[in-house]
Length: 155
Length: 190
Image 1 (tube, each protein chain N blue to C red):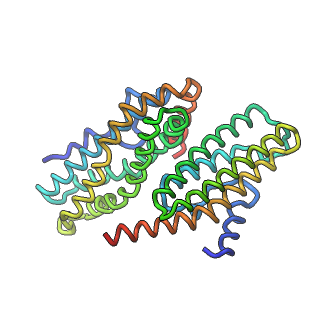
Image 2 (image 1 turned 90 degrees about the horizontal axis):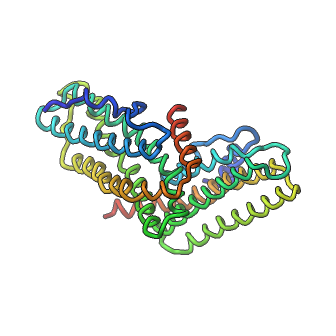
Protein backbone atom coordinates (compact mmCIF):
# COMPACT_ATOMS: atom_id res chain seq x y z
CA UNK A 1 0.00 0.00 0.00
CA UNK A 2 1.41 3.41 -0.96
CA UNK A 3 1.40 6.39 1.41
CA UNK A 4 -1.37 8.00 -0.69
CA UNK A 5 -3.50 4.85 -0.46
CA UNK A 6 -2.91 4.62 3.29
CA UNK A 7 -3.90 8.26 3.74
CA UNK A 8 -7.04 7.77 1.63
CA UNK A 9 -8.02 4.72 3.69
CA UNK A 10 -7.38 6.47 7.02
CA UNK A 11 -9.35 9.51 5.86
CA UNK A 12 -12.14 7.39 4.36
CA UNK A 13 -12.76 5.09 7.33
CA UNK A 14 -12.08 7.84 9.87
CA UNK A 15 -14.28 10.46 8.20
CA UNK A 16 -16.76 12.22 10.49
CA UNK A 17 -20.01 10.34 10.97
CA UNK A 18 -20.84 6.92 12.22
CA UNK A 19 -17.76 4.79 12.56
CA UNK A 20 -18.16 1.45 10.80
CA UNK A 21 -15.84 -1.50 10.40
CA UNK A 22 -14.33 -1.71 6.93
CA UNK A 23 -13.09 -4.97 5.38
CA UNK A 24 -10.08 -3.10 3.97
CA UNK A 25 -8.78 -2.94 7.54
CA UNK A 26 -8.51 -6.74 7.75
CA UNK A 27 -5.03 -8.14 8.21
CA UNK A 28 -6.02 -11.71 7.27
CA UNK A 29 -5.24 -13.01 10.76
CA UNK A 30 -8.75 -13.91 11.96
CA UNK A 31 -8.23 -13.37 15.70
CA UNK A 32 -6.49 -10.01 15.22
CA UNK A 33 -9.26 -8.87 12.86
CA UNK A 34 -11.94 -9.98 15.31
CA UNK A 35 -10.23 -8.10 18.15
CA UNK A 36 -9.91 -4.94 16.01
CA UNK A 37 -13.63 -5.18 15.22
CA UNK A 38 -14.45 -5.50 18.92
CA UNK A 39 -12.29 -2.42 19.66
CA UNK A 40 -14.21 -0.54 16.96
CA UNK A 41 -17.51 -1.48 18.59
CA UNK A 42 -16.32 -0.29 21.99
CA UNK A 43 -15.11 2.96 20.46
CA UNK A 44 -18.46 3.53 18.73
CA UNK A 45 -20.02 3.74 22.17
CA UNK A 46 -17.80 6.65 23.33
CA UNK A 47 -19.91 9.83 23.06
CA UNK A 48 -18.79 12.16 20.29
CA UNK A 49 -20.54 15.21 21.75
CA UNK A 50 -19.54 18.22 23.85
CA UNK A 51 -19.85 16.62 27.30
CA UNK A 52 -17.17 17.56 29.79
CA UNK A 53 -16.23 15.46 32.80
CA UNK A 54 -16.30 11.74 33.26
CA UNK A 55 -19.81 10.31 33.73
CA UNK A 56 -20.10 6.84 35.33
CA UNK A 57 -21.11 5.42 31.95
CA UNK A 58 -18.11 6.94 30.19
CA UNK A 59 -15.80 5.79 32.98
CA UNK A 60 -17.14 2.26 32.57
CA UNK A 61 -16.74 2.40 28.78
CA UNK A 62 -13.17 3.63 29.04
CA UNK A 63 -12.39 0.88 31.50
CA UNK A 64 -13.75 -1.72 29.08
CA UNK A 65 -11.92 -0.17 26.14
CA UNK A 66 -8.64 0.04 28.01
CA UNK A 67 -8.94 -3.51 29.26
CA UNK A 68 -9.82 -4.93 25.84
CA UNK A 69 -7.08 -2.88 24.16
CA UNK A 70 -4.61 -4.29 26.65
CA UNK A 71 -5.81 -7.83 25.87
CA UNK A 72 -5.58 -7.21 22.13
CA UNK A 73 -2.14 -5.56 22.30
CA UNK A 74 -0.71 -8.53 24.18
CA UNK A 75 -2.17 -10.95 21.65
CA UNK A 76 -0.85 -8.94 18.70
CA UNK A 77 2.61 -8.49 20.23
CA UNK A 78 2.82 -12.24 20.92
CA UNK A 79 1.72 -12.99 17.36
CA UNK A 80 4.43 -10.70 15.98
CA UNK A 81 7.01 -12.22 18.34
CA UNK A 82 6.16 -15.74 17.12
CA UNK A 83 6.10 -14.83 13.44
CA UNK A 84 8.90 -12.23 13.15
CA UNK A 85 12.52 -13.07 12.53
CA UNK A 86 13.79 -10.54 15.08
CA UNK A 87 12.56 -9.47 18.51
CA UNK A 88 12.92 -5.83 17.46
CA UNK A 89 9.68 -5.85 15.46
CA UNK A 90 7.58 -6.88 18.45
CA UNK A 91 9.43 -4.45 20.72
CA UNK A 92 8.81 -1.54 18.32
CA UNK A 93 5.14 -2.39 18.16
CA UNK A 94 4.97 -2.73 21.94
CA UNK A 95 6.32 0.84 22.27
CA UNK A 96 3.55 2.15 20.03
CA UNK A 97 0.94 0.37 22.13
CA UNK A 98 2.48 1.73 25.34
CA UNK A 99 2.43 5.25 23.91
CA UNK A 100 -1.29 4.85 23.19
CA UNK A 101 -1.96 3.83 26.80
CA UNK A 102 0.00 6.86 28.08
CA UNK A 103 -1.85 9.25 25.81
CA UNK A 104 -5.18 7.74 26.89
CA UNK A 105 -4.18 8.26 30.55
CA UNK A 106 -3.47 11.90 29.82
CA UNK A 107 -6.73 12.46 27.92
CA UNK A 108 -8.71 10.75 30.65
CA UNK A 109 -7.09 13.03 33.26
CA UNK A 110 -7.98 16.07 31.12
CA UNK A 111 -11.53 14.84 30.83
CA UNK A 112 -11.82 14.36 34.59
CA UNK A 113 -10.36 17.86 35.10
CA UNK A 114 -12.96 19.36 32.76
CA UNK A 115 -10.25 20.48 30.32
CA UNK A 116 -11.48 18.22 27.52
CA UNK A 117 -14.73 17.38 25.75
CA UNK A 118 -15.68 13.77 25.16
CA UNK A 119 -15.62 14.53 21.41
CA UNK A 120 -11.86 15.10 21.57
CA UNK A 121 -11.37 11.74 23.26
CA UNK A 122 -13.59 10.07 20.66
CA UNK A 123 -11.60 11.71 17.84
CA UNK A 124 -8.28 10.66 19.31
CA UNK A 125 -9.39 7.02 19.69
CA UNK A 126 -10.88 6.92 16.24
CA UNK A 127 -7.88 8.43 14.50
CA UNK A 128 -5.33 6.45 16.51
CA UNK A 129 -6.93 3.06 15.96
CA UNK A 130 -7.54 3.49 12.25
CA UNK A 131 -4.12 5.03 11.65
CA UNK A 132 -2.41 2.32 13.68
CA UNK A 133 -4.18 -0.50 11.81
CA UNK A 134 -3.54 1.02 8.39
CA UNK A 135 0.03 2.25 8.82
CA UNK A 136 1.42 -0.28 11.31
CA UNK A 137 -0.61 -3.48 11.52
CA UNK A 138 -1.55 -4.00 7.87
CA UNK A 139 1.97 -3.72 6.41
CA UNK A 140 3.74 -5.53 9.22
CA UNK A 141 1.27 -8.37 9.72
CA UNK A 142 0.77 -8.70 5.95
CA UNK A 143 4.53 -9.07 5.40
CA UNK A 144 4.90 -11.54 8.25
CA UNK A 145 1.98 -13.63 7.02
CA UNK A 146 3.48 -13.74 3.53
CA UNK A 147 6.83 -14.81 4.94
CA UNK A 148 5.26 -17.54 7.12
CA UNK A 149 3.25 -18.84 4.16
CA UNK A 150 6.37 -18.95 1.96
CA UNK A 151 8.26 -20.89 4.64
CA UNK A 152 5.34 -23.35 5.02
CA UNK A 153 5.07 -23.80 1.23
CA UNK A 154 8.80 -24.50 0.85
CA UNK A 155 8.70 -27.33 3.42
CA UNK B 1 -24.68 -46.41 6.32
CA UNK B 2 -27.56 -44.01 6.68
CA UNK B 3 -26.66 -40.48 7.74
CA UNK B 4 -29.24 -39.66 10.45
CA UNK B 5 -29.95 -36.10 9.42
CA UNK B 6 -33.15 -36.05 11.47
CA UNK B 7 -31.09 -36.11 14.66
CA UNK B 8 -29.20 -32.87 14.00
CA UNK B 9 -31.99 -30.29 13.96
CA UNK B 10 -30.99 -28.79 17.29
CA UNK B 11 -27.39 -28.53 16.12
CA UNK B 12 -28.19 -25.97 13.47
CA UNK B 13 -27.28 -22.31 13.96
CA UNK B 14 -30.07 -20.49 15.76
CA UNK B 15 -31.46 -23.66 17.28
CA UNK B 16 -30.73 -23.59 20.97
CA UNK B 17 -30.43 -26.51 23.28
CA UNK B 18 -33.55 -26.71 25.48
CA UNK B 19 -31.31 -27.16 28.52
CA UNK B 20 -29.30 -23.95 28.17
CA UNK B 21 -30.28 -20.29 28.04
CA UNK B 22 -28.39 -16.99 27.80
CA UNK B 23 -28.90 -16.37 31.52
CA UNK B 24 -26.36 -19.18 32.02
CA UNK B 25 -23.73 -18.25 29.40
CA UNK B 26 -21.23 -20.96 30.31
CA UNK B 27 -23.93 -23.62 29.93
CA UNK B 28 -24.55 -22.15 26.49
CA UNK B 29 -20.87 -22.39 25.64
CA UNK B 30 -20.80 -26.02 26.77
CA UNK B 31 -23.94 -26.75 24.74
CA UNK B 32 -22.09 -25.30 21.71
CA UNK B 33 -19.35 -27.88 22.27
CA UNK B 34 -21.93 -30.62 22.21
CA UNK B 35 -23.03 -29.35 18.80
CA UNK B 36 -19.43 -29.19 17.56
CA UNK B 37 -18.98 -32.84 18.53
CA UNK B 38 -22.23 -33.73 16.78
CA UNK B 39 -21.15 -31.93 13.60
CA UNK B 40 -17.75 -33.61 13.65
CA UNK B 41 -19.44 -37.01 14.06
CA UNK B 42 -21.63 -36.13 11.09
CA UNK B 43 -18.50 -35.25 9.12
CA UNK B 44 -17.04 -38.67 9.98
CA UNK B 45 -20.22 -40.41 8.89
CA UNK B 46 -20.26 -38.40 5.69
CA UNK B 47 -16.76 -39.60 4.82
CA UNK B 48 -17.80 -43.19 5.51
CA UNK B 49 -20.98 -42.79 3.49
CA UNK B 50 -19.12 -41.37 0.50
CA UNK B 51 -16.55 -44.17 0.69
CA UNK B 52 -19.24 -46.87 0.91
CA UNK B 53 -21.97 -45.57 -1.37
CA UNK B 54 -20.59 -42.63 -3.29
CA UNK B 55 -22.37 -39.33 -3.66
CA UNK B 56 -26.13 -38.95 -3.16
CA UNK B 57 -28.45 -36.17 -2.06
CA UNK B 58 -28.18 -37.28 1.54
CA UNK B 59 -24.43 -36.70 1.41
CA UNK B 60 -25.04 -33.25 -0.08
CA UNK B 61 -27.43 -32.44 2.79
CA UNK B 62 -24.92 -33.61 5.38
CA UNK B 63 -22.19 -31.44 3.79
CA UNK B 64 -24.60 -28.48 3.84
CA UNK B 65 -25.34 -28.94 7.56
CA UNK B 66 -21.69 -29.19 8.51
CA UNK B 67 -20.81 -26.12 6.43
CA UNK B 68 -23.65 -24.13 7.88
CA UNK B 69 -22.58 -24.90 11.42
CA UNK B 70 -18.92 -24.02 10.95
CA UNK B 71 -19.74 -20.96 8.81
CA UNK B 72 -22.22 -19.44 11.23
CA UNK B 73 -22.34 -20.88 14.73
CA UNK B 74 -18.70 -21.79 15.34
CA UNK B 75 -17.35 -18.25 14.69
CA UNK B 76 -19.95 -16.84 17.10
CA UNK B 77 -18.77 -19.27 19.76
CA UNK B 78 -15.12 -18.28 19.28
CA UNK B 79 -16.18 -14.65 19.43
CA UNK B 80 -17.97 -15.25 22.76
CA UNK B 81 -14.70 -16.53 24.17
CA UNK B 82 -12.63 -13.74 22.59
CA UNK B 83 -14.91 -11.12 24.10
CA UNK B 84 -15.67 -12.49 27.53
CA UNK B 85 -13.73 -15.55 28.62
CA UNK B 86 -10.14 -15.12 27.46
CA UNK B 87 -9.66 -11.44 28.42
CA UNK B 88 -10.97 -12.11 31.93
CA UNK B 89 -8.65 -15.04 32.52
CA UNK B 90 -5.61 -13.41 30.95
CA UNK B 91 -6.13 -10.41 33.22
CA UNK B 92 -6.96 -12.26 36.43
CA UNK B 93 -6.00 -15.92 36.02
CA UNK B 94 -2.98 -17.83 37.29
CA UNK B 95 0.10 -18.32 35.11
CA UNK B 96 -1.07 -21.84 34.19
CA UNK B 97 -4.50 -20.57 33.23
CA UNK B 98 -2.96 -17.78 31.17
CA UNK B 99 -0.76 -20.23 29.36
CA UNK B 100 -3.74 -22.47 28.54
CA UNK B 101 -5.66 -19.43 27.25
CA UNK B 102 -2.75 -18.55 24.95
CA UNK B 103 -2.81 -22.10 23.60
CA UNK B 104 -6.59 -21.86 23.03
CA UNK B 105 -6.12 -18.54 21.20
CA UNK B 106 -3.59 -20.23 18.92
CA UNK B 107 -6.07 -23.08 18.38
CA UNK B 108 -8.75 -20.60 17.28
CA UNK B 109 -6.34 -19.11 14.79
CA UNK B 110 -5.41 -22.55 13.45
CA UNK B 111 -9.07 -23.61 13.24
CA UNK B 112 -9.96 -20.46 11.32
CA UNK B 113 -7.07 -21.10 8.91
CA UNK B 114 -7.95 -24.80 8.49
CA UNK B 115 -11.68 -24.29 7.89
CA UNK B 116 -11.54 -22.82 4.33
CA UNK B 117 -9.68 -25.92 3.06
CA UNK B 118 -12.18 -28.30 4.70
CA UNK B 119 -15.05 -26.11 3.52
CA UNK B 120 -13.90 -26.25 -0.09
CA UNK B 121 -14.12 -30.05 0.06
CA UNK B 122 -17.62 -29.96 1.56
CA UNK B 123 -18.68 -27.43 -1.03
CA UNK B 124 -17.71 -29.97 -3.69
CA UNK B 125 -20.05 -32.52 -2.08
CA UNK B 126 -22.87 -30.05 -1.61
CA UNK B 127 -22.71 -28.81 -5.18
CA UNK B 128 -21.87 -32.04 -7.02
CA UNK B 129 -25.50 -32.28 -8.11
CA UNK B 130 -25.21 -35.82 -9.45
CA UNK B 131 -23.21 -38.97 -8.72
CA UNK B 132 -21.26 -38.69 -11.97
CA UNK B 133 -20.06 -35.18 -11.09
CA UNK B 134 -18.64 -36.26 -7.75
CA UNK B 135 -14.86 -36.59 -7.57
CA UNK B 136 -14.09 -38.97 -4.70
CA UNK B 137 -11.85 -37.56 -1.99
CA UNK B 138 -8.23 -38.68 -2.15
CA UNK B 139 -5.84 -39.23 0.76
CA UNK B 140 -4.84 -35.56 0.76
CA UNK B 141 -8.46 -34.45 1.04
CA UNK B 142 -9.09 -36.88 3.89
CA UNK B 143 -6.00 -35.50 5.63
CA UNK B 144 -7.37 -31.95 5.32
CA UNK B 145 -10.58 -33.07 7.04
CA UNK B 146 -8.68 -35.00 9.70
CA UNK B 147 -6.49 -31.94 10.38
CA UNK B 148 -9.57 -29.79 10.79
CA UNK B 149 -11.59 -32.08 13.05
CA UNK B 150 -8.53 -33.21 15.01
CA UNK B 151 -8.10 -29.70 16.41
CA UNK B 152 -11.23 -29.82 18.55
CA UNK B 153 -11.05 -32.64 21.11
CA UNK B 154 -8.20 -31.37 23.26
CA UNK B 155 -9.31 -27.77 22.78
CA UNK B 156 -12.80 -28.49 24.09
CA UNK B 157 -11.46 -30.61 26.95
CA UNK B 158 -9.19 -27.77 28.12
CA UNK B 159 -12.03 -25.27 27.93
CA UNK B 160 -14.52 -27.39 29.82
CA UNK B 161 -12.18 -28.77 32.46
CA UNK B 162 -9.97 -25.79 33.10
CA UNK B 163 -10.88 -22.53 31.43
CA UNK B 164 -14.65 -22.27 31.90
CA UNK B 165 -14.57 -23.18 35.61
CA UNK B 166 -11.71 -20.72 36.18
CA UNK B 167 -13.39 -17.93 34.21
CA UNK B 168 -16.57 -18.35 36.23
CA UNK B 169 -14.63 -17.65 39.39
CA UNK B 170 -13.22 -14.35 38.08
CA UNK B 171 -16.40 -13.05 36.43
CA UNK B 172 -18.88 -11.51 38.84
CA UNK B 173 -22.66 -11.71 38.48
CA UNK B 174 -23.08 -8.42 36.49
CA UNK B 175 -20.31 -9.52 34.10
CA UNK B 176 -22.00 -12.88 33.57
CA UNK B 177 -25.34 -11.16 32.89
CA UNK B 178 -23.67 -8.76 30.43
CA UNK B 179 -21.95 -11.70 28.75
CA UNK B 180 -25.25 -13.58 28.32
CA UNK B 181 -27.01 -10.46 27.02
CA UNK B 182 -24.21 -9.79 24.53
CA UNK B 183 -24.24 -13.41 23.31
CA UNK B 184 -27.98 -13.22 22.79
CA UNK B 185 -27.83 -9.85 21.04
CA UNK B 186 -25.13 -10.91 18.58
CA UNK B 187 -27.15 -13.99 17.64
CA UNK B 188 -30.34 -11.97 17.25
CA UNK B 189 -28.66 -9.36 15.07
CA UNK B 190 -27.44 -11.94 12.51
